[in-house]
Structure formats: structure tokens, C-alpha cells
Image (cartoon, rainbow, N blue to C red; front, side, top):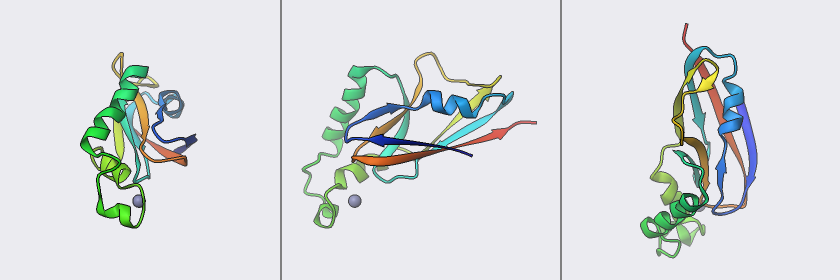
Amino acid sequence: MKEIGFETRKGDVVDLTQHVEVAVEGVKEGLANVFAPHATGVLIIGENEPGINKDYLRLMEKLAPEQGGWHHDKIDDNAHAHLRSALFGASLTIPVRDGKLALGTWQRIMFLEFDGPRHRRVLVTVAKNK
Ligand code: ZN
């Protein structure tokens, strides 16, 4: 298992593809699981383009506004970040072929930070086919 650590600020969209690719070098065929052990930041597969990176947050503000009068805000001030994270899975599974992630042309592994500033970790587990 490989661990990727990085620092974030609220609203960051971080491209982790290169770091995950290192973990699958030399793997002929298999699966890479990428897991974010966090309740207020998630992983998605998306294009790394500045406009869409801002649009994720615009969409999230519509679906789970920061000033939503949420119950969790009575004990913490980040209910919106928890709710946004709940809309996504905590992990991604990506096929590996000939030592590379079998991603589509525009697909990148992106971390969305809904809270922050934070130190974040992502775990990469690779399962090899025989
Ligand atoms: Zn909280």
C-alpha cells in the first residue's frame, strides 16, 4: 500500500494521477483502489481543467449550501463539507494495464477539498491479476 500525503485549502481540487501512477508501475494487469480516509474531502475522476474545477464547487453550493442551517453546524461549522462528501464515494477503483492506469484521455484522479486547510492522505492499494 502506498500513501500519498498533501496539504489543502478549502475549495482546492488536487490532481493526484501522477502519484497514483507511480504505485502501479510494473503491474502487468490488475486493479488500483484509491481511498480517501476523510469525511469532508473526496476523490472523483474528472478532467483537470480550471473551469470545471470551479464548477464542482458551484454545483456543491447549490446542492449543499454552506449557510444551510444544518444540524451539524451547532457542534461544528462544516456540515456542508460532510454533506457534499456524502454525495461521493470514499474510493475509486481503476483498471491497470501494462504498468499504467487504464484511464480515458480526459480522466484524472482528483481530490475535492470541501473543508480545510487540512493535511490529507490518500491510500493506494494495488491488486495484481495472475
Ligand atoms: Zn464536522
